[in-house]
Length: 163
Image (spheres, rainbow, N blue to C red):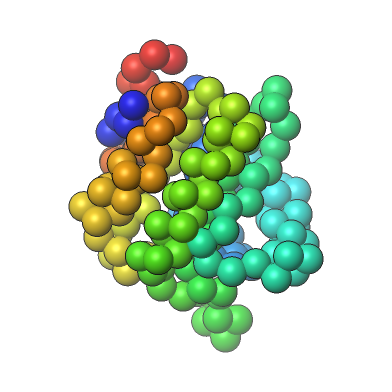
């Protein structure tokens, strides 16, 4: 079941936080920055994985231990431009593939719940209604709570049904 919630995603009780990134993302902005500050080794391990696997948009990289909070990095954007330290724009195809890969990962790893921010906004190049439709079509077979944080409220615990 997909729930739209408001609050601080870093306070989620969900097992996994999924968010959009670029290939070799510098993780210096938004939620990616907050996650790499909370989990300092994640960025280096992500970069190593990107290099080793010659990653591309549409892939999903899982980080973390089963007993702790985990992160699913959804590669929905082209690689960052080193000159301006800003990722490329997200595409529908990459977002669709990344969500499909998230679903496969969730089934394989038996995730119990997922929290994620809105993936479509003015920075990504996608609009939320389009991404919301993709989210529902690609994750519909998961029988776990999925919390989409539609409004960030720092320091506020979201009402996450079933948690």
